[in-house]
Image (cartoon, rainbow, N blue to C red; front, side, top):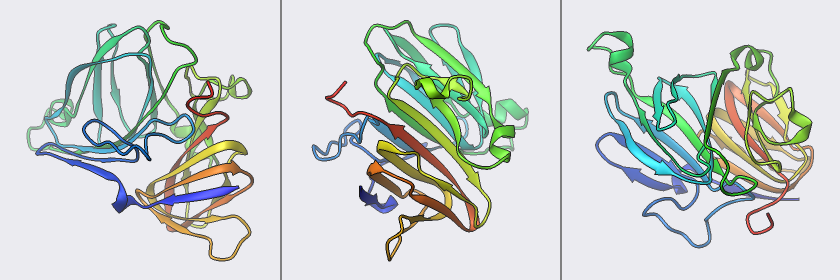
Length: 255
């Protein structure tokens, strides 16, 4: 087992008037040949979008895209006719497949009908490749707030056989699953046993314990890339935490 800690402040950064985005991996104009992916995870973008702004219509192809909102709300529209509002506790997946165009906007003032209510939206968007190219485009969203309230890791999106009937939404990647947990202070979960596990602290602070001295503390924006994950405990700090965990059983190049 090997653990690679990546700190929030070391991420690649895009800052423009309406967007503050931190990239865990190479993205857009930011390219680092030594940091293009981990396992199957190609994109882990931590975005804050100002009210009344967002990503105009743009294309994607052959990618499984999962969006998880931490605060505020995001309006999705795409060329397949799907429309939806994504908010905390709602899981959303878009399969780009043979090609899809979509937009993502922070229309908080329109949603409330109050011009004075201008709330930024904070979200994490994650991309993994599909099992095969050329699949039909698709979209799915589902509320999982009740499952999160029970504690523990909730399979948010999965293509793995073992999660059928349990995961909130299904992705077209049989070697990967995304889990989320909202942890009360002192609560703990175990990372799933996997060839590759990616732990991202979205909110709060956690300790990553593996039975050795000096277990690292991780704060919001930090990540741990674990190769050969086995029974590592994630323990929430005094203010609680929300974590996103990718369980992956192969990597890019081995598909």
